[in-house]
Image (cartoon, rainbow, N blue to C red):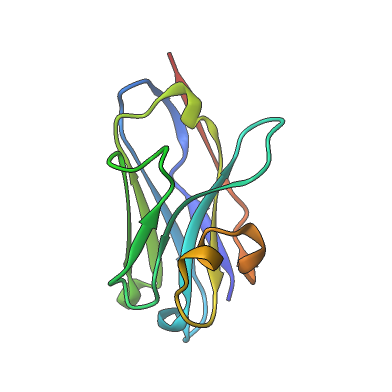
Length: 126
């Protein structure tokens, strides 16, 4: 599956952004999906994940209550609604897909994903 993320930009602290990730392939609904981010000089980190059915979601503690992941299998898309953005949310955001059963530990691991999008930059100014 090929993934393409979009929706990044420059916003002020407290603003909202919605990232989108579109995917090719007819088996999109069989993939668990995740959003990760990588700030300059830092390792890539987990942000949010959603099961293939959309019924299970999980979040990093740093974004819980502010970010919402969702998916629309009819549109082969996954979204990340980001509210109350903070300067520390500044990063390149990546969407990723993995096959298999939904397991929280694997979902939160960079190494657990088979496919990655190219990333979209989110910059939050103070």
